[in-house]
Image (cartoon, rainbow, N blue to C red; front, side, top):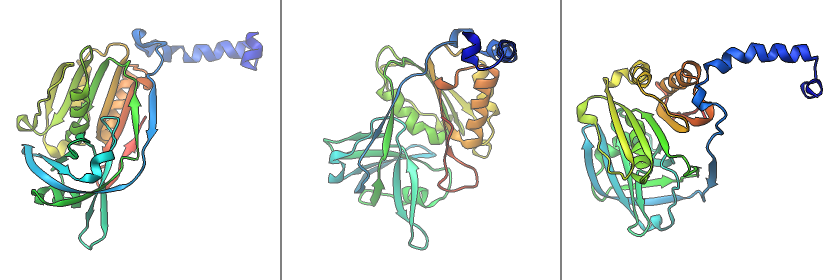
Length: 280
């Protein structure tokens, strides 16, 4: 029966098991045989919306919060904290420029949408945020869809840089009692730390590094090395793409953590405008 299932000589089958045995040994024993969490992908009607800035607030020196309003938000839908919309502005030559941003918070009844802008570079959308004041107009598109992670996930490890904080903040604030969250955030200094209100059991650890070191994964990996990742913890990672790639490799290769329990995205790529990378 084994020979028939393997499709080759039994000795070859045994040899293959022996070759893969060292990889098995690297897996965290508590994480073996645990199926990955369910993720439901929901598509939304894609449309443009014309909005107006209602308020502009600097929640940290490097993060500007803009609350937008408009009747177009009556049917706005965002089902996952890490959804993204397209923010659409005019470029230097009058052409449209589009960038991905997280819907930080929204309220259909109030016709309001909150977006946090990391002021870490002087692109066209960042410049819009710098110049924005009440009454400034903005167009958005999307979100195109949502990846909704099963609410059976009760443990989270959220890892990210400044660009990930809007999604991290929304995840934290929307989580309820009985959810355990560890937040590992890389920011430029104490002045960039944020606080979040949540019913979840939240532990926050901040790593300080200059913005010009945002592509160095070492500080985050060093912090991760001191964190015990319990089984069935969904590890969510978002930062510059090379940083995310290094963290993902560290978790799977050195810690033996199951790939199915890691959701990783490169929210930006050094030297490339309007570029992201998905790692699973």
